[in-house]
Image 1 (cartoon, rainbow, N blue to C red):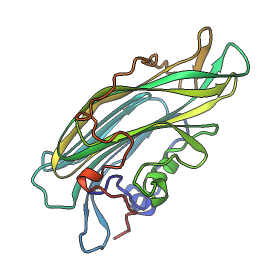
Image 2 (cartoon, rainbow, N blue to C red):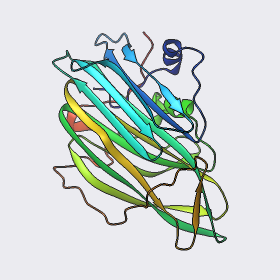
Image 3 (cartoon, rainbow, N blue to C red):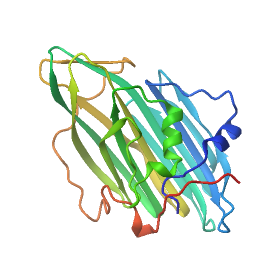
Length: 275
């Protein structure tokens, strides 16, 4: 199964129409998709796809037909929801739910450099041939939805071992993936300069090949806490929940491969050629 559904952006643009506009930070973006990977090497054929985005609110969309081959995605600021399902499909038939949000943050109340706490609370279930990944990136410059999708759809986004890399000009704050059900909190820290705006992009994807369910539709809540006495201002105007700083360490059976490619299911990442 292809872990990250690498699709040439020109193919997506042709299917979605030239009028598609993806906002720069802040934005929310949802892209469910069903497709078929030709075993003869002729590329990937998109069966159904949808893409919606907003600069102000939560977006929701779906693609495919349940329960045979279906994906739905809900994306809000600081909140991901992704569901993918395949039932008794031949090898190479996939359902993928990609959720991305980005926002700008400025910490006020002092000067110089400091650190703040961030976290992701993640809960979801997997069955069959399914998996998920989640990454949070930070940059001094705004992210764009188009650029992030292009990055995910490109071989350069993945290390030789298969791990998702940070997009150019950004750094990974949190990055992890798994092939099992998970219910855990993942904490981290982020260095910043008072008074200087920084941008965060959060990417979540759930996926299934042939037969299975990845249900993370009520999952992946982001939290952020500035230092004591400081004030956090966002471009979106959203007030994010505080970060959860107590680590709930997932058991090995719950999170099989934290931050490692999903080799156990034979997943691979490769650029998806246009058919």
